[in-house]
Amino acid sequence: MAEHNGRETLDAFFAAFQAQDAAAMEALLAPDFVIHEADGLPYAGTYKGFAGWIDLLGRIGATWESLTPIIRHLFGDGTHFAVLMDLALTAKATGRSIETSVFELWTVEAGRIKEVRPFYWDTKAVAEVAA
Image (spheres, rainbow, N blue to C red):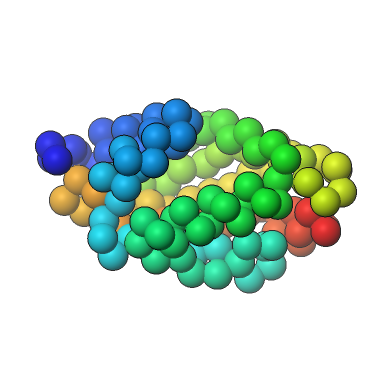
């Protein structure tokens, strides 16, 4: 895999996510990748490696009929990045929708994504819409 700088890695990952290109996403995640979802969310937990990422996507897909992320700001120092995005969510179980914001901290090392820590603006409201 060609070495990317951190911003190029994130741009490539977001493009692969949008294209639903699992092979490209896997190539951009570190073997010890971890993402931490808040306890108040329907898909709470810590997910590890590419298998964990796929598990999380499955749980998110089981929760939301539609999920539209819009990245508003992305900035960082080459290794650590802050991503602020708006989310429009529609729950499968209730049919209700919510618009919210999520702030995420991303860590990129050696051209691969090592860690993501999402912080939802209002996890309680998100969970209530999903339930």
